[in-house]
Image (cartoon, rainbow, N blue to C red):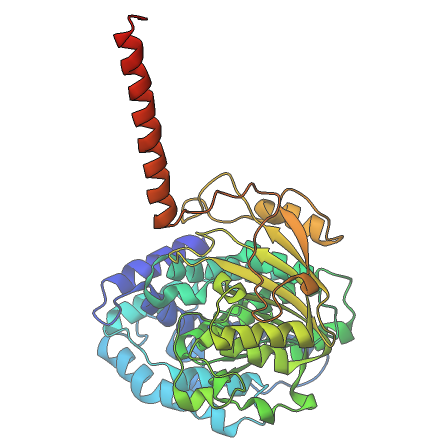
Length: 488
């Protein structure tokens, strides 16, 4: 049912003049979905309060509650035909509802409350559905959805993940919102967080890493009430620069069961590394920072190693913000391992001297749909220098892409071998003392793969051609003698 509802909503938004792309569909579905979720959440809290003999004061004023403006019901359970629609509905949403919800940010006690998230979300977006009639159809469809049971929430979160994935497949800047879930699950499993750890992603996007870490921890043991509260309030932290990604990340975590995600809308790289104190640090960092971007000179001033490459600035940030003994799993372009520019060399030296880079997973092209960039995953622990690094080259018997995406089975051998860092056809260990101590080149060259003969220089090619010419002349001369002596 949910899947067909989402498809029907997309069909409605496709014909609306204000929505032109998959990104718009997700954004507009998100805010309506969020308000319906909020209504169901308030009903659950009210029921729980009544069962325990307590009273519950609703977050949303009566006039702006879903059951009043979006879905007033008749006695038979059908939506009242007098419900707002057309221009009346569009005006109510744009002129009254959104301004009202924006104020929650100012009035909230702190940033880690559902009230603050309401205000933040509705400060960052606007209603793009131009036709009030289309909006009425969308509202009616979303009113049919339920978030009351665990099964309903699970199905909804799964479908929402699917919409985020479609954004990535759609190209443009949608790809930055989606890291393949099998890869995230593998990274989380290798890093192996524990309940009580603080987990951080400074380039949170759609919050895929935080969501998968939440699912991993939730399944790791039978949770006590204290464990559940720890996961809800004191475990997951993120920062996101872009408004749409911020909203999607918040919504994704809420749908997966984190009621008030600790995600801040800010530019992570605007923070000076020198200002990071011990209280700001985290036990775990999981991230796929954007690569290929170029940061302005004033942003670069926040970092000791100056570079315009966004991903390299993020890596400096992640190293700095990890606690001593903290663990990280970071996706980055594979050229980080071998680039010879000063910033790359300095950053590799910093990583190897301040952290134990114990594992590098080398991924094939096509891992990220729509991006031909080759990537690696760096797994490291902060606090002691690297003595040796275990490499794993993921070799697959097919080309990855939209039709044949990466799956968990592809990564099963890596997960198993990584536990003991065993040598295999696809894995090997490099001693840091054996690499070039000037460049710290970490190129992932599998010693078990036969090396191709190196390309010859032009001089070598010309010399070989002369030698072949001389051999040909000699052979022709000998053949002529044989013919003249009648030996043929």
